[in-house]
Image (cartoon, rainbow, N blue to C red; front, side, top):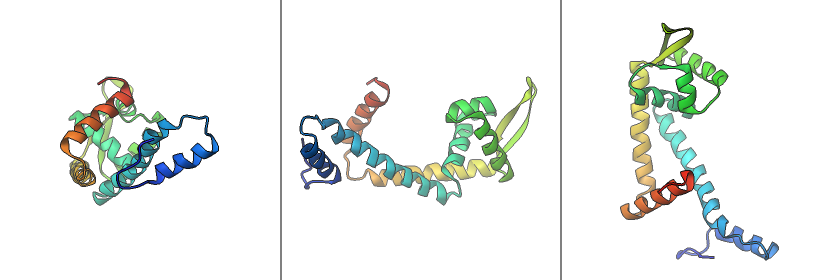
Length: 165
């Protein structure tokens, strides 16, 4: 099991403890997956802080970012697909975003039961500020990792997430 050049970290200590308890089990996957889990927790906190500086919750950013990237109105169904949440949750989220003046809604002329959702100027301003802060914070978090290592890490993570290089 490789250990950091800077000494053992929490994952090394965890693996060492489990190795003593379960010596017959190959714990090698924990070297990567436990660190990914810890990185994900740190990233979630970083994202919440970045979005909070723009006055947005993480879920608000997700919906507004989908609209901003689309550059046009989206149906609620398209937003459900883009954000991977249920339709009931989306309805609640759109109600709250509309109350805050961050999205507008109008009936869909092509579907009498559906709506079209658009991002407002304030919604656009906030999501742009949130994205700008997120990129700044993520760059700061990665400052100790060389650009070449960042590219390698991105390639390995892409392979892990979706099986393609």
